[in-house]
Length: 234
Image (cartoon, rainbow, N blue to C red; front, side, top):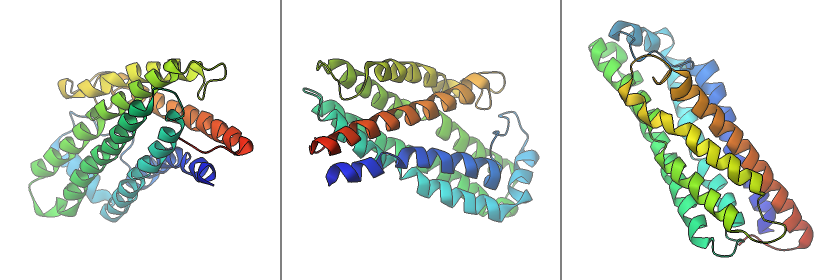
């Protein structure tokens, strides 16, 4: 029974990504991101155009961020089946729990920006908006730690038919490398490394989404085998 529960939970991560993209693009209008060089009045107009939709969208994405926790728990269940990987499984679970919180914090900052945008100087709204984007894009290090724990667990699995395939280990390592520039957007106001640049956000987002889809699929496949064999997650 537990394996069947895990097989449902493993799709909460991709569900979060779908909710995020749909809400950021179609509800809040936050994607593509505003430029780091945007002026205070331009940022204030962003919040003034449709404040209710922005507030609704922020509530939705904050709630969706919690979906990372059950998703990581299902990943952890598979890693614990690998000999010697229990501590790696626990570390990746804690790291993903921190990641969920680290996404919730900048969303809360944007909520503060949206709450009183019309009752303060535009530069204050701009500062809150900037803080939200800086926190949202740069807090990749818990995810980075989670990914490398998964890489290590995959490669110490020496069985003929590993729990998770070797190619997923290589993909996870590449994704960890590709998200790294997002942690450096603080140093750039324009260009490819800024928080609205191809290296600063688009490549890391694509790497994250592709990796999450692939690892969720492979964990789902492993759980299907477990259910057929009548075994339970670790």
